[in-house]
Length: 327
Ligand code: NAD
Image (cartoon, rainbow, N blue to C red; front, side, top):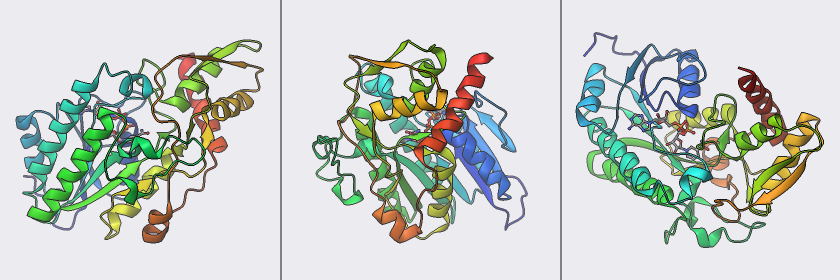
């Protein structure tokens, strides 16, 4: 245990090499935290801002023990997960790994956190835990927090998220662990995975548009009429921080209510590029027919509402992906 001053704010960010985790590290540093990051890998697209980065496997108990012993953390942010976009989550090919790996990480983190007095633990759940039957109508998906049960997520990724939400809530009930739980809805932006099979729709579409030349078609999975909403990364981090400083446990949605079809998302990216491109609909893994964030609870409890339009966030993401493609 280091000899940090009692009042020092010291955060452990698990998943600090990932998209949201690396942005969160930067934000916590700007707020004066001492930040310890941990992940299997360092951030792919830039240097970490963490004071110390513990590279290792959070499924391993001995590794977890070693990082939990290092400091008396005041906050723990648990973002590490085996995850990806539709091409990773909805094919079924990765189900066992997704469930086993993420559950094992969460079992370790809940268990080691309970021994740290007064620590607050943030857990990143997902909108994928909402029941499929409430998301069949693309124009009227229901994703209010109280619609989670009876549970029927459409993927094993969603079931693991639901299990781990319940795990952290059980540690809160039985051990007094101070937890905060957010259900993220499609977070996107610069420094997110944009190629390789784990990328999500906004990044995949920006890349396809970036690669195409006027007159080409870009491939869209399904008929493109499935709906989603997308939240820009900076807005997500702001909401996470507001949740952490509040007394509200959640689970609470962190997402945008600007719902669009995937066709509309692609048209926006094409518009940003200034190219003239057509859409070519092909078969592909899809997920639920419609999904949108319901922000009533977060507005009421945290007075939070995102400011960025999808177009603005997509413009910044497109620009960043173009830069990556040139490297
Ligand atoms: P990401 O894949 O970029 O980050 C996850 C990180 O976890 C990766 O860097 C990965 O290396 C790390 N990790 C995986 N297994 C590990 C292990 N065994 N030991 C140590 N590190 C390990 O994903 P992200 O988009 O930053 O998502 C962060 C969290 O938010 C995840 O829990 C994810 O399920 C959740 N979430 C994200 C979104 C989104 O739209 N990005 C939506 C819903 C929920």
